Length: 265
Image (cartoon, rainbow, N blue to C red; front, side, top):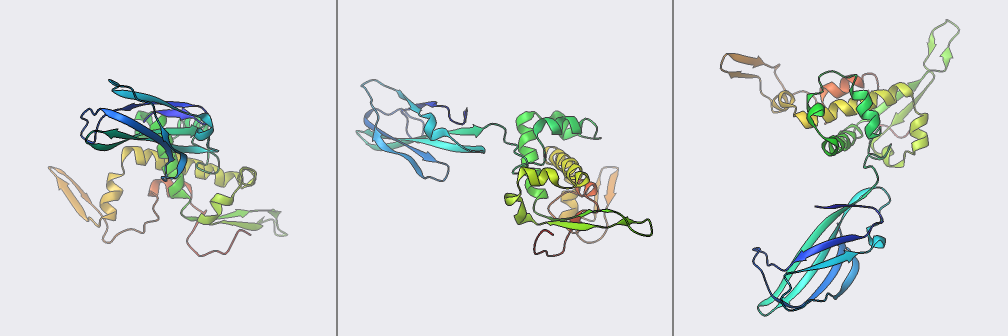
């Protein structure tokens, strides 16, 4: 599908063909525009066709292609009236508002922050082979996985009377908190936790791009595998799964919590 910037007009070409790709000869046509949920953005109205036409060109106004953040789909639906009955043709396209990586709504970092940080991280094979679109999609999926678990972030306030680090106060972040978290609140959160999230996101994105074959076998309960002269043995039983790879969780050691929480404190 073609992609258009938010707020710009989109010009699409509608071929006069049936569901099998065979050409049809329309005597009349009507067009409407839908959103990705099937909602009507522009009601059905006549589309001019002339004898001998094999396609039509239609422009959707920029007003119908405005999204606040992320991306969405628009669908141009044309109903062709022919001598043999009606034929519907759909032409979808994508509308994107700037970067898809919006901190902290869809990512813990921008694309270029991830590029810079990944340079200092080892064994990034999947990440290294991928292009920007693939990396972006993987970062969004990694963010989605990492925001399904809870975090406990301690903020020390200094030293106590025995010269020990005062545990200070604790912030709890639940999965349902993320849609409400503002950029200002995220920037004010503990820097160590934010860096751990960024590294975990990149590692998880790399695994998404590369495929975590070993973890998949472990989750399936496989205890051993032999291929030729090579063999692998696993511990009995399936590991606890949080929906995130062990490699990503290592960066979040000390922050992940499995207990139920009632709010941030």
